[in-house]
Each structure stands twice: as structure tokens, then as C-alpha cells.
Length: 117
Image 1: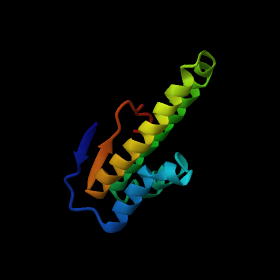
Image 2: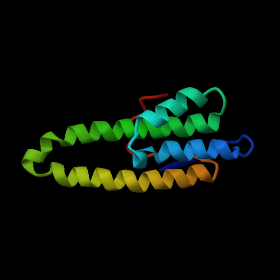
Image 3: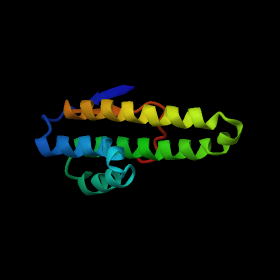
């Protein structure tokens, strides 16, 4: 779990809100879509928002891939505990990332595939 604090001036309030919403998008049922839209819309305007949206997007894509991989494992009974662990981990890590984003940092999720650069 790395935290990157960007060297630029303190982010604006709206930038912090967009960054926090990107991390908390799973709570609103738009886990991959909201970070993607925020990243595409804000990547040229704010490096801070782009960094947070990119990290949230990579995290949610990774969670989706991990969940798909767990589905066949349900038949040998290890898939259910793994899916529960993925769900709980995503809740905790999303909240931690949103807190870091509100403090002006860019949170790097652990065990995340860096698909969007």
C-alpha cells in the first residue's frame, strides 16, 4: 500500500470530490464506469484526479477479474470464502483510498493489475 503525494499545489475542492467519488464508486453500483468517465474527462485538466481515477479504475478491473476467477472455485468450496474476502477487502481499501484522496494524495492499491497507464 503505497501513497503518493503529488507535488503540485493543494488540489481544489472539486478535484478532491471527483477523486473520492472515483474510489467510492463501488458503493454507488458503478464500480468501473465512474472511474473510467472521470479519468477520460479529467486526465488533461488535473493530474491529481487522473491519478486517483486511474488507480480506482485499475482496482475495480482487477476485482472483477479476481471475482471471475473465483467463480469456478465455488464448486470446490474455496470460492465462497475468497469472494467474501475480495468483497470485504474492496470495501476497506476503497474507504482508505478515499481518505487518502481527501488528504491530497494518490493511493496505490495493493495486488492491483496496472492495466490503465
